[in-house]
Figure 1 (cartoon, rainbow, N blue to C red):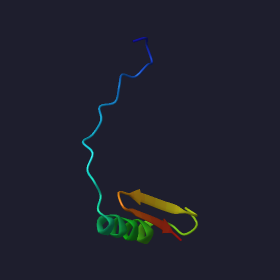
Figure 2: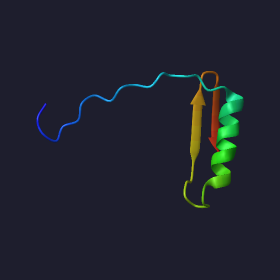
Figure 3: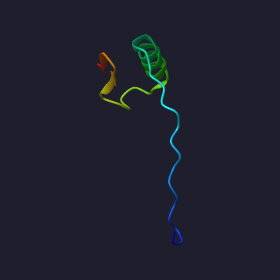
Length: 53
């Protein structure tokens, strides 16, 4: 590896996110997100698809 190059990033264990946990996380995010910062949010999971607005 030459100078300035980074090595591979180790992957974190993958956990599935339930639809209720995704909804809860979205709610927390929206409460702390300044208005106008994001126009569209989409969370796609196994068997669900949440879009905002």
